[in-house]
Image (cartoon, rainbow, N blue to C red):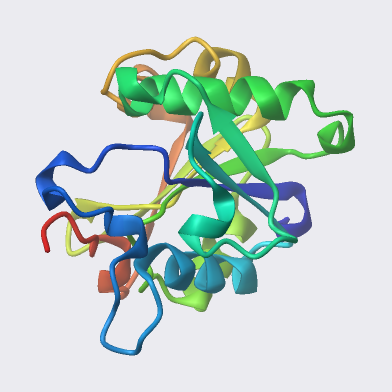
Length: 190
């Protein structure tokens, strides 16, 4: 299924909890930037990875490789839900994705998700389901939404993200228990 899952890396937010610095280009101990490390990791698990950035972001300033497609989120200032809606409107309008069965919502500040986890999530993904990892009883990311939910994701707004869809369709949610703390580990503070 991994060939049928496109990965969306959310990187359009203001990251207010991180302070004045742009956390997307914050250096990790190994010298890579946070967004670059997250992207590198996700590219090993997904054939098609696209980065969602703000309307005025410059991809080169974010250390994005030129071969990685970006999606502009003009409504990113309204919150994560608005960024997701912008991204899914772009996906839905892209004719090259007509055969794509699902999309993974990935966070640009989570570089430690293991490849085995990404592969297992993709194997569980379906066009009419929602697949989410669970580690030690806590839900994590990425979350894969089958194509059946894309139109509803296009209608999100505000800062709630896609949580409301997960709550609305509990019978269609598949929770995959993983031994991967990376699904919970994001960087919100310097």
